[in-house]
Length: 76
Image (cartoon, rainbow, N blue to C red; front, top):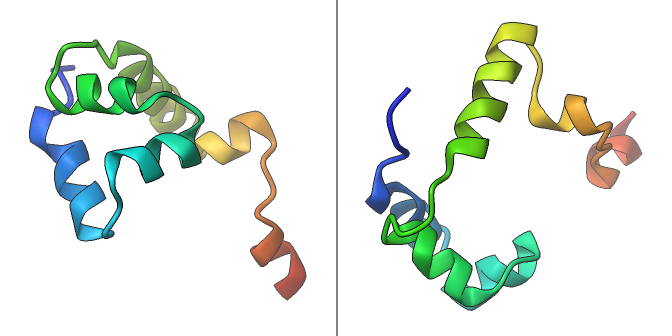
């Protein structure tokens, strides 16, 4: 598996109209961490491993951690 394309995180963030600060706050990391991810200075190998694990187990990351989206839970 190769590295996550450097520009992909920034591209998607910008499409959603989020600043690095807003994304950092949502994810629970520092703004500099987001900048490092976007510029390829920090490895995202852990993310690649989670993606591979989910593909192999045919599940989502939410399934692995038992996350329940409150918005979806209200619909049920």
